[in-house]
Length: 148
Image (cartoon, rainbow, N blue to C red; front, side, top):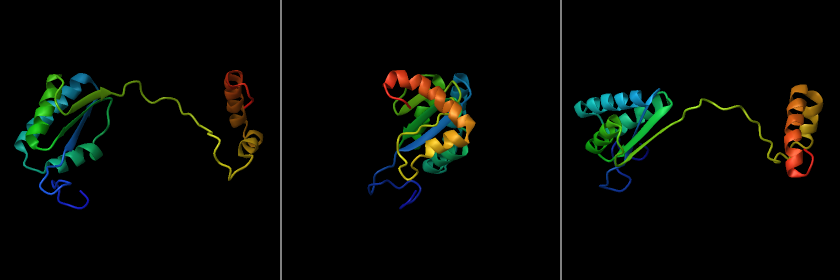
């Protein structure tokens, strides 16, 4: 943590709230992962902020996710146990990012005055860009009332 020890609060004497992030491929896997982590957390004596950092930056972000927050190991373990039981708990947020990645979209918001005529140059030089721009125009022109 910048400016202090691993479990030092932002206010002198105050405990920091730490997030523990858990993810899995399925809802059942998430519950199992939370149960395993709760078991390890009870036995571990490491700093809860170190565990939180490791969970956030060294683990894959899979589709089913939970974040448990707490200022103490007991609060974090209680949150993990709630996730493991499939029940809502204080300081617990769960959700999923199912559906996989979407299609790639390039947005031209009208900024870029440093490159006047850039799209015109791309239309002339890149047939793929010209084709996609024409597809966009076919959809947008009737809706906007102006020509792309």
